[in-house]
Picture 1 (tube, rainbow, N blue to C red):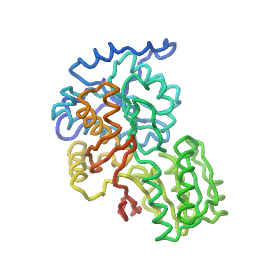
Picture 2: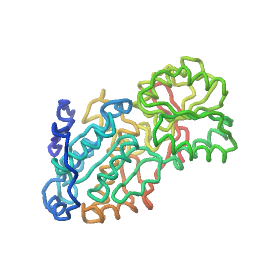
Picture 3: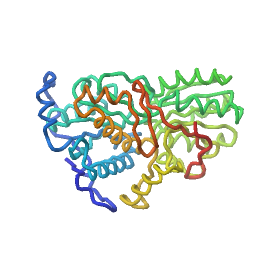
Length: 393
């Protein structure tokens, strides 16, 4: 287990073996015992707060793992230097949430049974969140940090990321008004976030006077986009909405530009951050827009402080931090604020506090109302390997 209670100032170098908890006895585990309030009370009496952070280190979304790890470590270092959460120093363990969903559930089961964690944090695809809910719901708090499709209402699950209504809707209207975007083609990874996000997006496109001229979902891990590009070219859209994740988005956007489509067709993405942009490459970002609650170029005091600390701790050549990775920093800031307001880390008071709260992080002030996160939303245009903020909503 990795304890970050004594993270030093300056650059941090960690052996990869410290990033994972994957006990060898997963097979044949018995069912979890019924909910035990006494066990939770015993956990609460410990001097350390054990947080299990489920990050993705493998597969298409694994590209976000390094920046997510750094962002979480930075938050823990800050919080522990200031006395922890309700006087308890954070002890952080990392678990890989990549690979088959059933394997991730097994790791979570191990974490509950053998590692005795107090809180779960997750920065992974929504398919994993849906699979973990039956295991974690009603047992321990579960903070889910990245952009997602919205609508999470499971007791004890606190989702704080961007959702389509606040993220995609204003960007669609801006592109319609300022770039004449009317014809839209939607392409996304074949799982729940693109499915449900596209359903809402179609409503926003119609509001803006546009129409959807094509839609498809691509199996996660597929990097052959020739057929997709042929269909896009035939449909002649003004904009392609890209809801592909991780390396799938990188290979698609590269192929899109190399085919010549970037010169004539706009792209709008909800999960292209600085990490993905670096993989796409400067030559392949023409007419590429991204909407997000966080970009590292945001000019604010809160973000300047965050970026200064990130660079000081991990070095000038650290993995670029974008929305998905940075959300782990936000998750820990949110957890601290919710726990202090509740005066407790027990599931019920913490979840109640977390449903309606204002906390501050690198994104500035974030307001949670009835479980929905409201934050400043930014539309940015890719500019080589950086972003340029065009409009803040």
